[in-house]
Length: 296
View 1 (cartoon, rainbow, N blue to C red):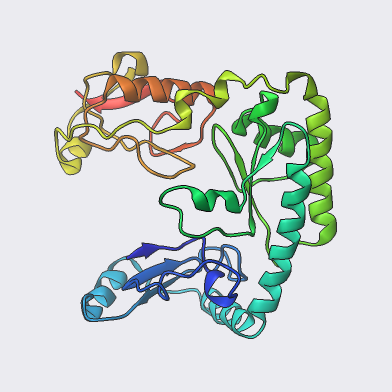
View 2 (tube, rainbow, N blue to C red):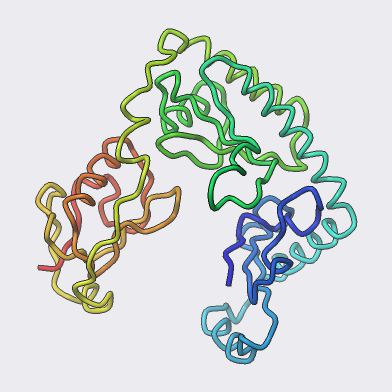
């Protein structure tokens, strides 16, 4: 089973990476509201083959699905599918060409990096989506989080995601050449403003946030932890305690802590740094990460 939420476009253009179902997955989820033209919240679960009980899968979906589905969402899925089936290859070739132009321009700017096909030489990397622009200004001493803020506040450009090192921008068939020219011009101005820091990589770019902490020990079941008596404690006092909540930084959207897990010193250090950097987190009661709720 594959989470292909950010890959609804892959099936429709041969220049893009292979999609999960073509690669042999038994099931995959794609979000038609991401990158193609479905309305917000629209998505599709695809399944095939003998290893999945389709009748049981249908029952499980029914347990969580509304009994009053929104017809407009269904219609948008069908319209998006038709648009991709008829025009997808042409539309996404155009998007890929725009992205490659922007990538070359960004890579020519002093102090900026933009991920390209060189990543294919890394172990574990099979393909590269040319429509994604992964930009780093760490050589200017600007972390990914700071770069996101600067682009939003100073240039009115919203990125898709940011982490300690990079920002990610999606180029789609809805973008025009002038949109990419605006991005490149903004990054050129930003590089000039921070040029004095070139080569002085900021601590935020080499910090613990550049990697996630190791998995920790499961002490209680998630159910036991969630329904147990709990108390909110300063995060500095939480090492060795048992978490009563989920903590999921986004990106990458992978929990570093779940209910019932022991809070390690490494996780405490990571979350303290995350809170200080303003990292976006899902799950905890205190989104600033000043405190964590633990089993009493």
